[in-house]
Length: 133
Image 1 (cartoon, rainbow, N blue to C red):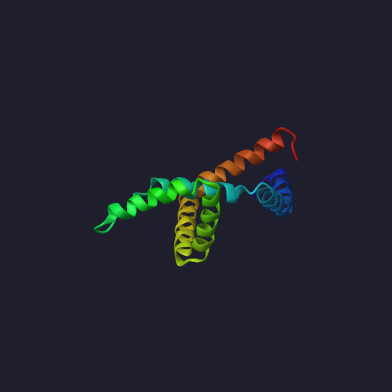
Image 2: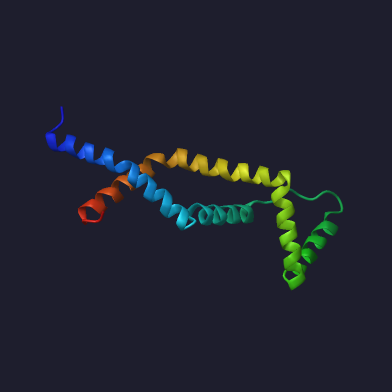
């Protein structure tokens, strides 16, 4: 059986845990933490992925995509980019990309759960030691 102070500490932690969860959730939502992180991760991941080679005549497609890329940098191109983004959001490709990104995040959390738990523990103890709420 643990020391009385250990039991008291456990009670305090149990009582505080729901409030800590709510504050973490609220701060993450207010700061769009996951939106920002996921957007940055997906953008970098897509940039790192090598697309499969185009079918015969791919040079034509590649040239067309290059022209499209330059056109999208114009004011009218911005509207076209927005339309393309809206189309992509409704397409099955968006679901595939979303699922792939979420699977990557889930795998990261599974693989790094113990380390992240250590971060939570260190941060929580450091906050208490410094007198922070």
